[in-house]
Image (cartoon, rainbow, N blue to C red; front, side, top):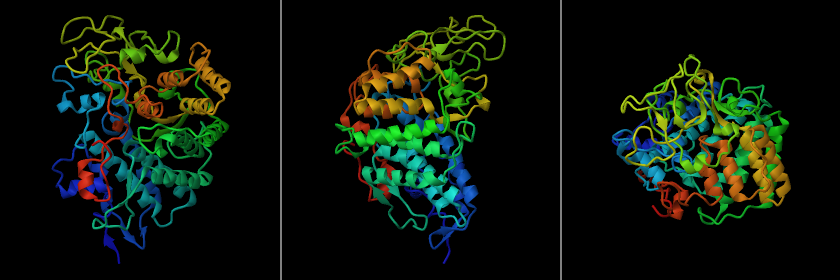
Length: 503
């Protein structure tokens, strides 16, 4: 018998929200749920167009382009970004400050929203895989997308609830442990690989390909020691067999024709040609622009997030990644530089930008407090430029990351000379001086220079054992914060979930 699947199609987090009559759910957009009304299930299959369902799986990647929720859990908890409260601006009841200070709890709205978003997307992938008439390639793409979303659940929360499409709200979803989820994700990716297309940099980078699966597998095996550790905070033991897998999958990406861009900032522009492995087909990088620019600049931003002076100091002069100064020539947005914006800022006509609130020249300072910051405090970051963001895709997987993953795997498995050569080849492409030696601290810093503000810094700091250390405006934190708590709403809706240690 066919049943109305509205209740059955909701993930555990949204079921909790419905049971609470949305009394405490925020930032759940209409498009998160409106397509859940349309399908029915019979014998574990869905009578729906698999192509349309798969398009939804890809369009759902827009959640990663928001400045809050998923992105905030990765970036604001790391040493690359600080969300200063400026007077009453960006106060938001401390929701940003608690991420930087590592004082979040299970009721944190971004934790709850991220949980809901990720698990709804996993469930939507299950719907796609259950659709009648699904082809082998569509199955492979849906498995990649399910693995992509489940990876983030496993990484952030350490346990992953899983609901089949024919299970109703009376069924409490089973919960995978971190290692069970890890095995499930790897199996999905390995099963998908043979039926995914070989795209290369000249093909589509907004749909799954063999390169997307290989890049994600490389990331998973590089972090496998974290995910199988007896305690989430470590210590971590990196197995040579895992490192060999990283190298294998990284080399497979290279074999598909990917290469480093000669201009670093081309990666974040419409001219991106050789590095972009996977990008969101929907959602715009505009939030990365507005969230950091001052409201007296063109375009007028939200005067929000900045980097930390210690992070900025990791860069040497001449390194493209440190930034390109603006060259105001009268064209719109020509007054905005690329990379790190520090010191006096300029208008498009070359005149000094003036802070409209203080009537003083707008000069960004390295120092920035977490609370009580004045409007000019903090170095701003501009990877996606306002002159072309409308035609630019938001990058999710990039070849520069793959190069450094391979180098790290070589270093961890004893090939220090080979690792150094890989890193120096990348640095040469970025205009930076060659390194003479490589160790864990140097490798972590190189990843900072290459991947800043791309939503991966927390993952790197956890893997290197640096996430709970001290940095500006944050004291050393408890070991258990390498995982986020299970949201209170999710615990209330599914007794199979157990709160992570320390919360």
